[in-house]
Amino acid sequence: MKTILVPTDFSKLSKVGVSYAIGLAKKMNARILLLSVINASSSSNTLRSWKKLEEEMIKAAQQDADQLIKEVKTEAEGVNISYCSVSGFPIE
Image 1 (cartoon, helix red, strand yellow):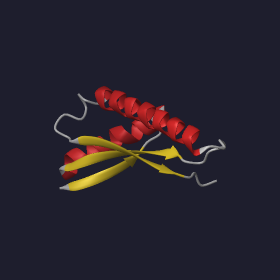
Image 2 (cartoon, rainbow, N blue to C red):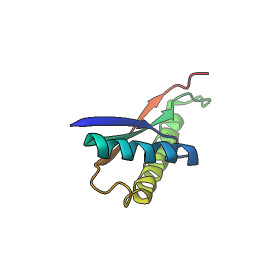
Image 3 (cartoon, rainbow, N blue to C red):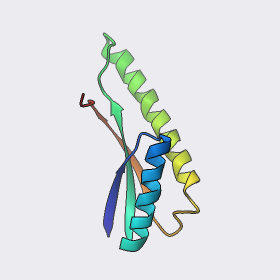
């Protein structure tokens, strides 16, 4: 099965991209993988405090993804939508 990767920051505009991807997935018989990147750059001095912050950001992103999937549930009927997050550094 084909997979359409949809990067998202959960903004209004990225939701438009998800809707577009749903239309493509239906035509291509593909699944959708939503992806968000957790900003791994940290101004904290200790690894322990950074890890706790990172865990909170991952949890918040998962909640946003769950909400987004719930919002597009009717539109995405018949399309398998999953979510994952990765840690990374933004490109300036």
